[in-house]
Image (cartoon, rainbow, N blue to C red; front, side, top):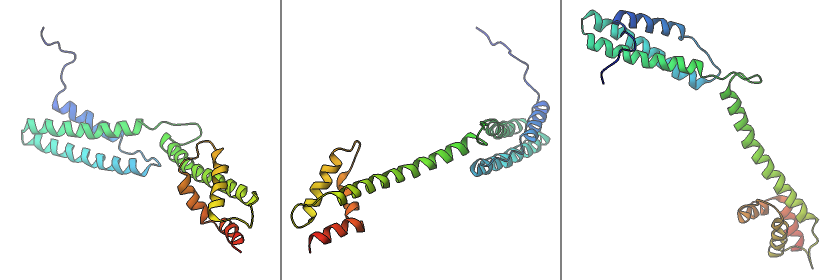
Length: 180
């Protein structure tokens, strides 16, 4: 089986013109994403440098070097084109990255708020519980804590959470009243 020509190879001049035109079309694209802008600037500078080096090599009649620099310029320009086209417009946000950044931030905040709510609920149940005898001591309060948390779904690492709960002023007040 032999080689089949799909299209005629482009000449150096035609390739250079096409790449320079493509670079001109995709030079400016400012997004709200600082990282994307930073990397686009690096690729733009690399493309300009490679096109200049290709032109210099072509003038020196070093065609192998000229083609090498054109390939490197094409890689950098390809990145610029892809990064410009890869922004997905959304109806409610400027682009997908900003939506993800905002949603990810909300998730972390929500998790912290939920944990605080759960701790407050447990502390409220402990304050509402009636101590036996002369008030709460640490072991009796821990038994009550275990009883309250046994009924909670997905309550992980109760020992660490118990230590955090003990540091609260309202829980310390329960213990100090029991030791009077």
